[in-house]
Length: 288
Image 1 (cartoon, rainbow, N blue to C red):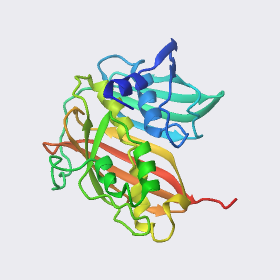
Image 2 (image 1 turned 180 degrees about the vertical axis):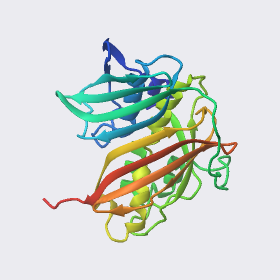
Image 3 (image 1 turned 180 degrees about the horizontal axis):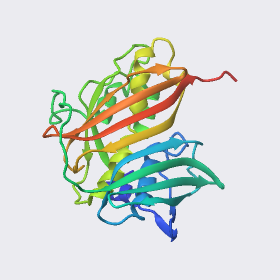
Image 4 (image 1 turned 90 degrees about the vertical axis):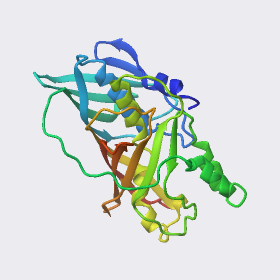
């Protein structure tokens, strides 16, 4: 992904018929469709079927099958409900005639109500921090294989600046909690629906790894199979991704070959703009 314009183009679907859309794929180095791409595209399809005064406030998706990056994805939108204040859509992402992902999205007309939130943690600001790719440069000569894998997933649409130094030693256990600043690399004026689609895309950023870090002494990273199972996201307040957002990531639980990632996203003024929860499969690869 070379630019924010390229990412926007990826998330913007081709309309085939009423409630039917087609999307192309980001060619991932790992060969499977990136979950954040499907989240953003499915949300784009849903937004295309609702009135302009309805804004997404929550989505709940399930990853069913690994997507094939060589084939386009068909998105089918079901109009579940059109109410006075809320609108609900159900989206199926389809390849080879089978759903690889399903998602329900609820939209709401803007209304006045009560307002409270948890406080934003006190962390170092983004200015002066290295990006994740810049941090990886430190292992280029001593861990070339790890560096090559890290570099291969680099994309120049959204910039990520971890507050805590990344630990590339797979034999050293780490903490579940991480803080990452993020924003679009290029400053582009976008409407709120596209902001939501971009944030859905970015919200899949290493969320499950927080459940892996405490257990790295027990198993090496290349011996693990990790796959997203579901993804829930809540949009609390308006935001703009051309400004810095803080992604506070933690893992409250891992059990029964599943791990959970939990994220809160704040703007620089301390407003909680979104909450993300994801559960994924985490287990040792089967021996051949």
